[in-house]
Image (tube, rainbow, N blue to C red; front, side):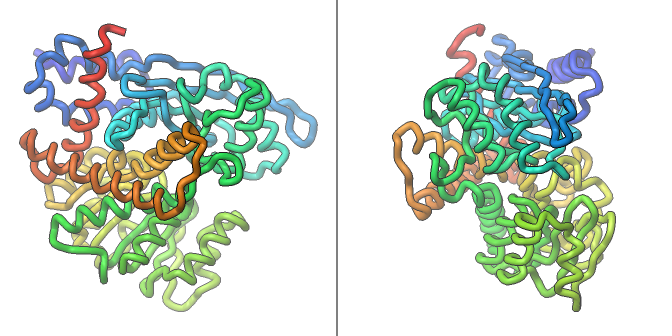
Length: 450
């Protein structure tokens, strides 16, 4: 006989065929919720699992726009509003050719629990389009963003749904979307986060996810009576999250020896110090170049490894922080990391580790920080931006960073203590999923069948 958790999961697969990322995210959460469902039978009675895996609303729409050659292009846009039990929907917008319902659903589902862990009143949602910003001119990106918001504006608002940026969507794109929203609604509200500092944005928002994951990893190391000083750290990615993870790890005394992009990895055994990071920031944020150029520029001991991720570099590593994209760290990568002495794996990206790799790392005594807890610093600071917008205030850099650090320390504490309470001491995956779930589930019960 199929048990309750398995039956809920099988129904998700049946109703959402070919959406493997969503299936993966749901399976990981449901399996870790077993002890919570046993301890709280009222959640089964109220069909909380069946309700929480089903989005409250899904909006899919066409986005027609005109390119620089005068040709009409058509993309698909979407917004999936998953759960609003504890606050307005909150989650990023992703522009990438791989965007489809399965990825947006997985991201939105994860966002429910991530947002709950921050302690801020934010529900879970996500959106995006299969638009590729690479190779597009400034005016093409502006026209696409405007066309996208021409539909999205009907479904968002400061007390309804507050999107932010994600892959392919930064301050520039948020600005173009905000401008159209403001014109259509004839109001200046905090409908989007990740805005420019001159028009309602928050200090530290750019650095928030990278700083936050580093603070979380620092707390994980403290449990092991360690800190970042002198530790060898491998980081994947070279975008926003990776950049500021490198910066904060270096400030805390760690030596970051890798960075990557979709073409390959650079391995720098001397460490990516502040001067080298400045070059990387300009390379990626201004020149929009490839990571290989880092190796070409610095030469010496720097190696470029085409079509490779950092994890199988045959050298000692203390901390691994995947900060690129989903499922970038597989079982073979996990085996290599364990063999090379890794003590902590902390996710900066969303679900960058496959399920079998996660299980292998945990079974081999590696402290594993799942993204929904470890990379919540970005959405936490988005929540702080919402608070500043609502109060018509701007906090100082020191105020925002102190609040961010406190939030990440509290997420670690809650996650760690919940794991122990529910019979899985040291298992951050179980702790994060159950802690986030309990907050949302209790709110859903209190609000009735809606």
